[in-house]
Length: 296
Image (cartoon, rainbow, N blue to C red; front, side):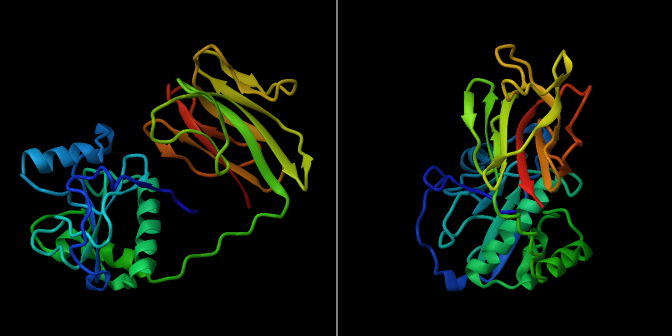
């Protein structure tokens, strides 16, 4: 899976400057923010603390992964940040919005691995030089992992990424999502809805083609206060419009090889499921915010 890196370098505390050459960077540092995910803090909250309480002129992390697993870039590689005491000149810092080692979500861990591999490739940093904060300077337990756990991460990072199966040619997805406050939005990167905005998905349309031929769809949606609602073939609509009701779970029959997953409030991305299986939650009052499709 490829992740989007959200660029906030223009607004990051202290701005950008070239404090070092890329050749000086030898290490990737892992951190957590020490704030529990459920508190829904964001990098701007940490910047305010660094500036107003600690008096810092810049932030601590080049990259930040929020509570939902979204990646943000705060600084260029050439910018030195205040991540680990006096050991910053040779380190690129990644921090995850989590309070302890048991607070990381699967989405955050996966995003961190992808980002770490990208930085390793960009800067020619070996897996052996991926370090936890405490391994660089032992003034903290951050990022909460033991040496054995960090060694396991490094061993995994040293292995090449498994190549995902190539989707059969000619299979395409298109559609629109009806989102709280936004109305109808076009599908983007095989994804319906929004991530990181806290907005409920209320309805969606979906068109799956194989070599240009539209595939038949059936299915059901679990809707707030209503329960299961069957897919409307006449309107190509899953869900309701104009009732301000969240989708909570989905089941789509769309043929062999198609998988989908849902991004659920307070939980993030769920596991991939195959055609004809439920994704999401029921009887928990949690909104679906996005749906992603793929072919395997």
